[in-house]
Length: 206
Image (cartoon, rainbow, N blue to C red; front, side, top):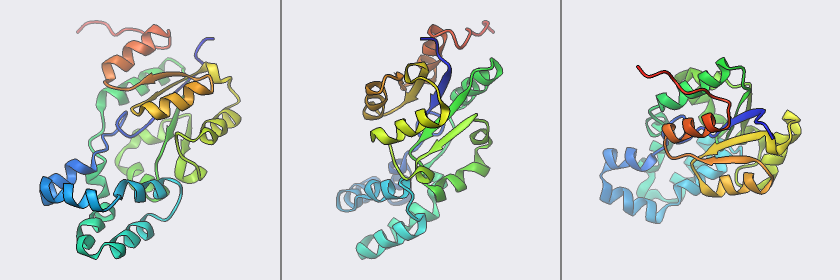
């Protein structure tokens, strides 16, 4: 079936998401490794992505691990330094698709509080035709329900959706529902995939 909408993950597809890199610079790699071995910060962040209060969850983590309190609080106070920079080639692909009249959706594990931080910094987040943000939906990838909710809302057949995500488990869950998928590694490979599906045309050489 022909592609009727292209669905983008956000983290590591349109915006680099690398808390480890931030902490390595802020506190040193050895201390970061020690902290992450003791504190499941990504697990706490999963709760934010499911819709829990950003500040509240991080303050809870800081209270549970007093030896790392100040470092944990960076997750809230310096979050934008962990979600940077944008991936300009991917943003350009998003805009080229829209210029071709192809509906473009976002489907991302993203908290309410963190998305509100990102929106003013990354204007392209307002350019999607539909946005499916886990914090507002109360469910996260790779759970089947979030994909089902996308299908119910957009009304398109699963096989007409082409989805790019950097995580294999998220891709597998979408494919299990019949979505067409692309495991994102580079913007160039994503562009080639879109060209092969006929929703993007190759750019003229400079």
